[in-house]
Image 1 (cartoon, rainbow, N blue to C red):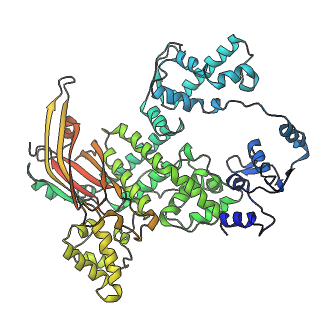
Image 2: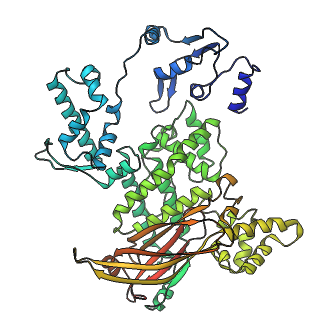
Image 3: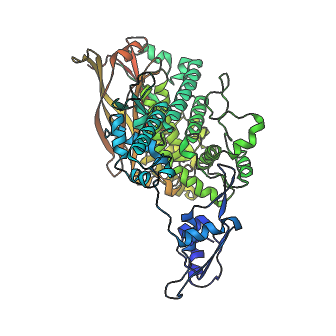
Length: 607
């Protein structure tokens, strides 16, 4: 039975007794004549012990006692240990004072104020605190917060101590910078925000999380760079060296972008693991005996509890390093559970209990925000070797999460009812990617689908549905590409300009994209989808510039947009490679696999 059905039956009197969890007691409106709270403790997987419910939770459960229009009073029975009996009697009959919780999140709060420019000096932090409810309660109840007394001098000393401690924590986690003499933090010292501090503020992160993300991104970037450097240049850049060598200043090399499968698997699995290891998932519940469920679930998933080892490389970033004897501890870790549930979501694995469904929803609600934060932090290292490919794999990871298909799944499987041997049949006709299929004329693509599905009346509706899906995919091309550079008078730096027209071609409304193997109808592509355009150096794989473009749905088949992007000309020229130098442009979709493309652009073209 669903919770709504049970709620209706209880309200209608079809059932007389209802047993509910503490969590459910918050979510349903079911007044009853008698409420029994069977115990005031729950098992906390984070601390591995039983802890008391918050007083507010107990009050919420007791508040269900008493049915309006039926009862003149309600009865609540709280079963509690003898030693806590007087405590619960006291809070039932005497109101508790409301205390401030700002101290627990002071680092996050002060970091946000510094990031937006409200606070610029140490003394301003003290002044800011003086206007808060936290300051009022410190004055009224100093011992609760750790102040010596309620005298003005002691309260001021307490605030200054709290300020210095907060700023020290923020600096240790890379969120702020300030000047410091002989280890002493002066009252008038200037305080400025950093990229990590801005990330924490803009993306609502805990102040420790951005540094974790930076560490994870850098480790994954190094891994990707080493793997690609270890491969042949032809395979690494997914473009033949001969094609590049024969290209002249006025010739573009354009083809489908398909990264090496082993590199993409390593990159996506480690990025997902780095994401799950952040402090944002510290509170993912690991309930009593769930370590056994986690272990059983890990055996059914592609990567298990940890990302796969990469042959020929060190272990790299895999979060906490557990010994084999600590395997049970891994399964008790909330970050491990998060990593498992992310994989289970992608492959649509069957979850062992219903609680895991709610946990997965909670995790997935945070993933887009956290991925955006990780990419924002990674962009701070744009001129570092390997960042170009790292940003590419962020887009590929979003594709995996959006389509709910694994890296090694055939992108053709996103076509509704696509047969298992369909990919082989298309490859025999020289069609190796979804983009190749969409690039064919309508009549040719229809023939290719007839080859896959057959052309009998029994399968005609399936073939038509596949054609509808295929025609709705946005085929993106680039035209009128020009590059130029100029010297900025203010800085003397050589700045490059890349201009081009991007063309979007769809043969159906985007709303037709429903029901593929990789998508549930409710998870189908939206009327608007995102395209990431990134430009990097031909050698060293440094990132030059990037831009996000929205592809709107509708009945207009062809659309175009003129785009200008600026980049560091000196960096592009130094890593341009042979034949006068080139750049690499990638057009990456965020919600469909198999439609990405790559363009080799000579540094001197059209301008």
